[in-house]
Length: 101
Image 1 (cartoon, rainbow, N blue to C red):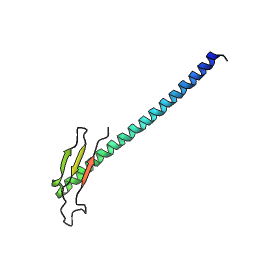
Image 2 (spheres, one colour):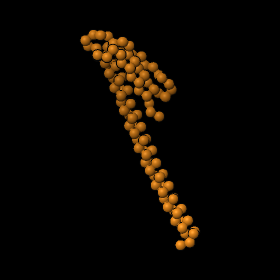
Image 3 (cartoon, rainbow, N blue to C red):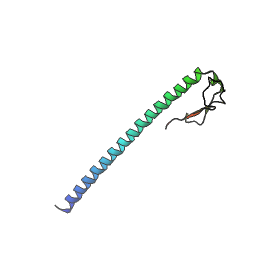
């Protein structure tokens, strides 16, 4: 085996290793993208649930919806809850749901 054949074999091996690395990186990126999509879906479902629950309760008039920034982040906070037996044991509810980039 001469020097050029050895160099060719080494270059082929390095190319195969780089291809395998790229495939592994792409698989990781696809997995992260799928996880983010699942998280976005859960956030959407949670936001819908929050809206549904808040519209069912009489004390929800105290809720302020405010946009945090332009990334479609949502924040809601309830004022001091009334202390009637029907009210929850929490005196203050704060939720912050943010979108995933």
